[in-house]
Image 1: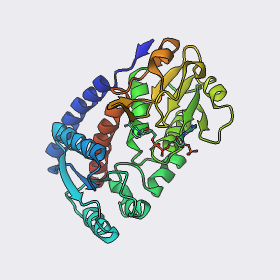
Image 2: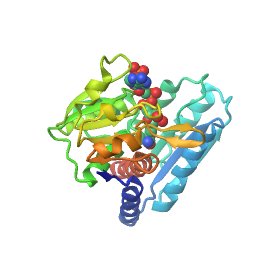
Image 3: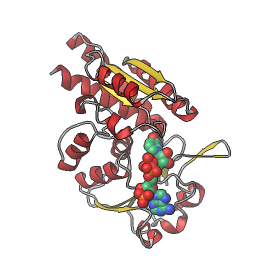
Length: 281
Ligand code: NAP
């Protein structure tokens, strides 16, 4: 069994990006800029935003951080995103989710121009992914694909089972695997005999958000298991997979923390550079 070290792979990617960002700036005379919008004071979101800004600094991407109060009005958030949409110094716009419940998140995300949609959350970029066209892809599923590639795992011909069907993880994950020639099954709360379906997977990807949801009986001997889930339990970060029981059955597995999480931020940086390069052309 190999435990995939997402932290190490993400650090390698950041080092590569540092060189690529410097080369882009040298050749184009332009800096790369990412705007991050945080609404409210959710402590987990504040940590995610801080980590993203720190990662930008590490690779030479300029970050513009905007924090609005938890009771910010819909029109105030929309006005900020609209302003960033036309700001030439901003190559990518990230609105940290979840937004406070009184806000219409879909409407706010729809104001991000697809060319600056570094999270790949807009309907246009999701549509491009479905059609196999180029465009920014959601960072977490993209990070999973990169983790597989750099670990020498090719999904071509594999039976991949994705548990979770959200627009930001499960669905784009399934599309990326399909585009990579895997045979894909997507599971959710209405799936019958979920354990049996999971146990057929050569590649099992869990994005549910329930600690120890994937147990040893749900995993085929020799399967690759990728744990996207993040939950907090007793002050600790937990994945979806019952790691100690499942790991011995797998050929490869990702831990939580230190698996998919660091890859998400690395892909955000990569998407921001790609958006800057495309807008410079
Ligand atoms: P989400 O929107 O809450 O979606 C969860 C999905 O899991 C839904 O499709 C839901 O099915 C399914 N599900 C929940 N309980 C289930 C059950 N008992 N049986 C079968 N399916 C079940 O969450 P998300 O945004 O996709 O995120 C998923 C997890 O990944 C969370 O833990 C999140 O924190 C984590 N995450 C991690 C990263 C990272 O960087 N590592 C990034 C993003 C998200 P229904 O559609 O039927 O409700």
